[in-house]
Length: 238
Image (cartoon, rainbow, N blue to C red; front, side, top):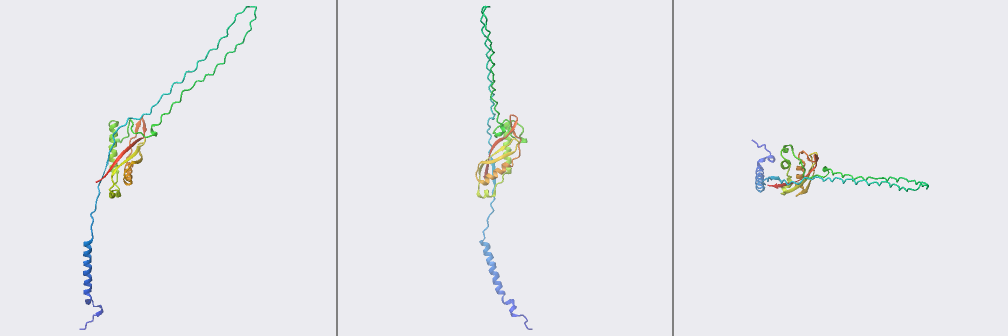
């Protein structure tokens, strides 16, 4: 029989070429696999701790000075009686007309006005008779309620603190001192950093403190007042 295959499309002649190309590709892939490097994923753990100041300051009570008593009114001098001269009957006596002395207008000086006592809520205090506290810290005396509330600050800030990824990569850690006010309505306000470490850690500490739940406000002289707190937030990267 005649061979009907066209020599131009006969693949048997070029199969060695394809086989060589295949070997070259396989060798290249194997070499590439040995040259690649693999990296282990590094995980960071962090720990946040808060040092609570338990130093108690004496209560601040605005002194009230009573006004001095008003001075006594000046005494009015009685009018002097005229002297009578006795003469004989045959002598005419000239009658003299005497006019009563005008009464002097007496002005009574009023005492100094009482000074208004500055409202206690105008400036936040650092210690009052009834410190702010949470409902679950209502039992006990004032010092025990304050200690329990500061422990709640520690717990709530730990739960709310989020360690920024960039701060972990940079290995940032330290103590951030955060100041805030518990208002006369019990809300946490005016949160700011008074001594920080780095912007990323400072911002994270402020956000955690801002998430503190409302408290029962403090009282001084049976009136709700604002109270100033300073909390050190210690951030450690393990």
